Each structure stands twice: as C-alpha cells, then as structure tokens.
Length: 110
Figure 1 (tube, rainbow, N blue to C red):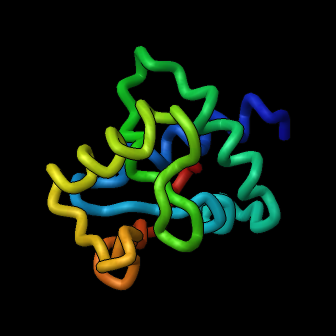
Figure 2: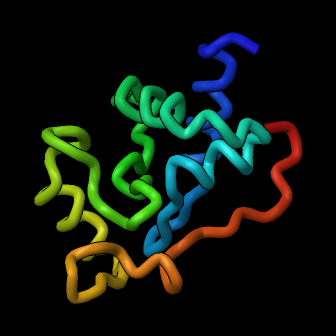
Figure 3: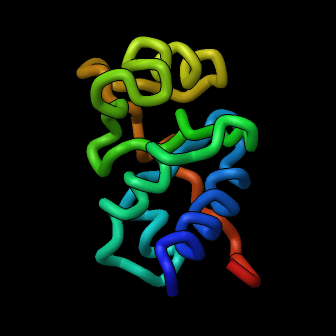
C-alpha cells in the first residue's frame, strides 16, 4: 500500500474520534493493522489537509502528551481544545489515557 493510501485510512479513522476522546499514534497504527507505523501516522497527521477539518488535536503520543512544537497550533492550543471537549488531564499535564482513550468498534473497510 502506498503512503497516500495509508494516510487516507489514517484520516478516515481520525475523523471518527469523538469529542472528549483521544487516540495515540501507535494505537492508530495497530487499528490499521500496521503496528510498526506510528511514525508514519505522525507524518500523516502533520500533512493532514486543513480543508478536511479533521480533529487532529485528538491524536497524542503513547504517554498522553501533546504534539511537539507548533503542530496543531502548538501545545497550548491543543491542550485548550482538548480541555474544551472535556478530555481529562493528570496532574503532570498529560491526558489521562485510562479515561480518555477511544477504542473504535470494528472498522469495516479501513
């Protein structure tokens, strides 16, 4: 499968993450049956077309940390968006993945 095809599948999955929930790069890779492609998921997220209006801010690293640098408007903006959706945070500033992790149902066709 081409990276374009993989990116399209990532975008379809990310579009399904509901408000108040998050997924990790590695989790997305596993759901898409490509468990060693977490970095490729990260590349897909950084290349996500703005016009699709994807909730990219709902994708985090495996520790529940915000994206680095100015990705998705910067850490502060990402945190603000997640808080506004009711995503729970731990005292250390990470998202509480035990409460906020989205476990998608069977994904036919992805």
